[in-house]
View (cartoon, rainbow, N blue to C red):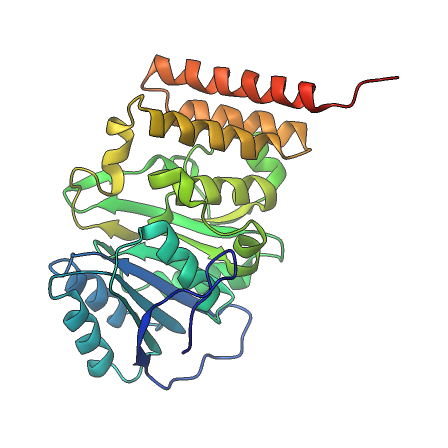
Length: 316
């Protein structure tokens, strides 16, 4: 594997340590797994072992280390060497760049039709790939992603809000999403169409921890998604500053205000009024724990609207 291109198409200085020579099956539901890691060598074995234990193996795994200083690179290299039957690609970086940028590298480096983006402290159950492939084979062309229930290991009975409406295994069209209450599609339980994600420009690094949630919600509202009412993935732990801790820590800082304004700007670019209104409502629901955030979103919307009015050419 040669140099990987970022979303702007410029070459990135990376260290590539090789791949197992396993071909990707020529089918319409090839699924690749993109794993990013930074100094999480303690969690990596659980994640990697869960992938090796799949009853149907993924077509490709791209392991990206984001400049770790612990034993992560050794764990990744050993996994590749121990599993020649799996198509494993290793990408080692010397400097830390952030999960969003590394996910985008994996997005452009993969050869699979569908991708599962995951962090080193997630894990999947043995039928994850099998169930997702079955869902993608069952569903008509047109859905942007498929999503299943998920859990946090420390909270065995806790299910994320995305699963609240997953009563049946079915395709949920974009029109149904627009007029239903699907407020969350977390990244660690979702496979996404690679071409659609590329068409969107990949993950937006300026959105911080919201990058995958926002991308998948935009895709679901634009293309629909396939719901799998089965728990197939989870998170090993909830640490401060990681994974699901963002919801209670998303405070009114300059950086976070910028993130919300960027979301509003992207939403307002869409010409579909129903889409824009629904996505704004989704954002409000996302931050409903804080009345201040409702004000921030409304203010951002009004500010963006005023900018658009001021940019209109004056009538002669």
